[in-house]
Amino acid sequence: MATRREQPACLLAPLQAKQPGFRAEEVGLALGRAYLASGRQEEAGAQLENVAERFGSVETRVELALWALANGKEALAQRELKEIEHARRHMTKYTRGLYQDLFKRLDAAVSGKGSPA
Image (cartoon, rainbow, N blue to C red; front, side):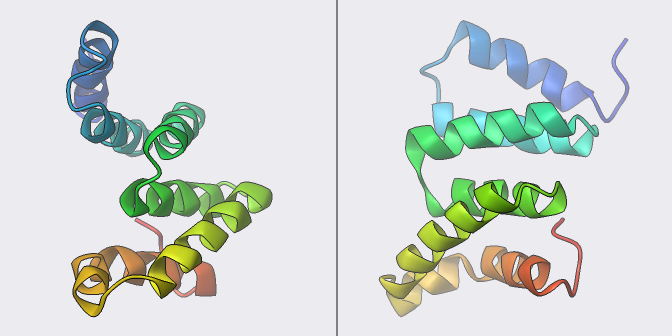
């Protein structure tokens, strides 16, 4: 039986496998986060990288950058940070506001002032 921390991943992985077209970005991102929460770092990284490459949204790129920073994947982190910075420069004030909490987490992780989680 899966532990409480592993339950989300145990539910999401089969959903992703059986219904790959069902809200693929949301399920992929949730699965990556579930792997992180259960301590499955390599699976989390692979999942987040797959979702970021496939969809390229700001949210997926930030999550991947946070994972890369936390796991010593400097080249990957720098690549994602460059993409995120480019997107941030071209966002409207309203859009930046939507991602404010996510950007705060990222900025704290980059400056080393806090946990990326």
